[in-house]
Image (cartoon, rainbow, N blue to C red; front, side, top):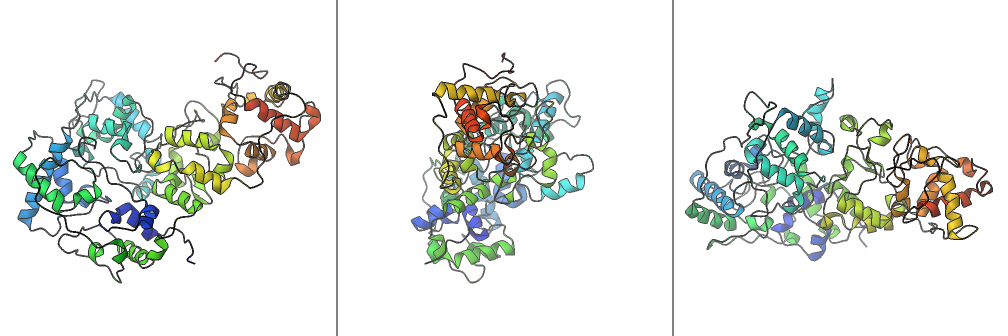
Amino acid sequence: MLARSEVTPGEFLMAEMNCVACHEPTDAVKARLASRPAPLLGPNGVKATPQWLREFLADPQKTKPGTLMPDMMHSLPAERKAEAVEGLTHFLASIQGAPARAAANASETRMAEGNALYHSIGCVQCHAPFTAPDGKEEEMAKIAASSVPLAGPGIAKKYTVGELAAFLVAPLKSRTGGRMPSLNLTTSEAESIAMYLLREQLPAAGPSNDAVQMLPLGDAPFVVDQAKAGIGAQYFVMLQCGNCHTGTPNPYTVSNSAPVARKFAELRPRQPAGCLATTPKVGTPKFDLTDRQKTVIIAALKSQEILELPLTGEQHIRRTMTVLNCFACHARDRRGGVNGLHREYLATIGDVDMGDEGKVPPHLNGVGAKLRPEWLRDVLLKGGKMRPYMALRMPVFGTDNVAHLPTLFEKADVPADALAAPVGIVGNAETDANWGRKLTGTTGLSCVTCHNFAGRKSPGIPGLDLAQTGRRLRFDWFRRYLLDPQSFRPGTRMPPFWPAGVAVNKDVLNGDTEAQMRALWLYLSQADFTLLPDGLVQEK
């Protein structure tokens, strides 16, 4: 029986390049690869300017370095390539509509806000930063090489402020694969970031305190030529563009047909050939791949029997976290996490002295044993947030891309001997919860000194809101964390109230460690709180 090997670099590349869009796979291979879908074209896609479209179609890599879009016209004679580029530009412009041209109202204030947001809410954990911390300019240049490219150096030619802002508010509408997630931006925030990213559109004098109009570089009147658009529609089919950009509307009469590529199972090259060739033949996509990338793809194709096997739960988790770049912020099982210069861009909101706990995203070691699946879904699908002091925002990747993770985390992490949540201790539920209320307050363990509670701010460090405990956590993890906080999060400021399992407070429940922790759980897991802990500021 074949071993379920780890996902290889070649497998990742084939999935991100969407090789199965042309090379028909078996159902098993298709399910395992879960290939990245291409951006939508047409009215639901992002509307790029015709000027940028023309340049991108002619030379994708030059216009947007690092793009996964292959050069489909590399083998056409110059005259035909010019005809195809022009036709496709008119075709795409005809089906997408004109880019949104909302008033830019750029000013020094909006630019500064966009700069601050871009460098603090998480954008630079994936994309290259534009400003460096003092003395770190050389390091910034190094991380730029490994960052996810934006729209390339021509971004100021590609978008209007209105169109880029609309994309930033709802990127999953046109990029369904989730590689660009939503950061729950308001319209105003998205406009400020768009203005900052498109700042080359500003007059040479730069922004002032007065509103300044911003228009794409090289912007010129463009009128769709229906005859050229019809020619572009023919090329769209002939060049197999619809294999990746599925669902693209094509209202023109098309007589061309697309060639049929070999099935995926028939791809067993011994050396770079076909799409991987240095000079692919006519009708074959030309990807910008290094020799190393070609080598790992060939290695994966030589072991296709592995691709027929379903991933294990942990492999599926790692694959998802890799393709969505979750490891840029979160560590799990000694992989990933914010490191190096990227840590310099982590910040807190307001004057909060919490050290790394207030800025660094939590690790995901054993997260399925820690968090209830309902809360995980809320975080993953809605951007649920428990750390209001953290500037970094939790991205939303979309149901199709991450809805499977809560179940996988649960199966991978929850120990077989996990304790069930308690239903009582020594008395009725109300009495038991009152013991937990006492422990939470200043006459017990003074939890509210450092933790917010039911929307009320603590007088000290604004720690996680304890009133969300039952909604978020599993009892077994809650209990083990209280016994040894440092083992779960090294460096945490959470003190050990039960060192070596011995209760510090002897006045509550006779110092019985297990009884005290059950009492805390019964109180903190209530749906609502009519009686608040002692010492808490009562006004919201």
